[in-house]
Image 1 (cartoon, rainbow, N blue to C red):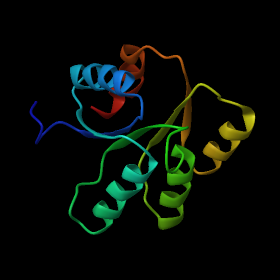
Image 2: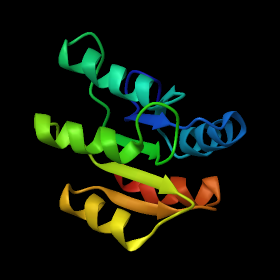
Image 3: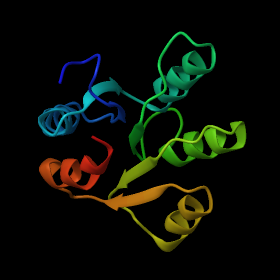
Image 4: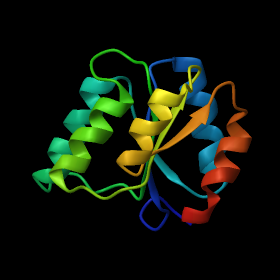
Length: 127
């Protein structure tokens, strides 16, 4: 499977080392991974999708707490825009409030720490 035929996964993670580990694990299970560094870039990516200059990802994995906008902020905005894409929020602080807000918009919460290979296996259903 090459980048043109592999399912597109958008990864938003501000920690460089963790982002690299996630990318390696996700590519190993068959994803073509596009990365962004923060909430501003995540939102900008979807603005470009809306303008048809970038493809819609099959799934989004986003850090919850990152510069700019939180992963939940972007997921809520996308939901209001009618964008339907599986959205996973990765966080070290998976409290009930976050889980409830995420559930209301159809997003899922994944608790850190998580082994990148375990995350990849959870998402393998999209490959």
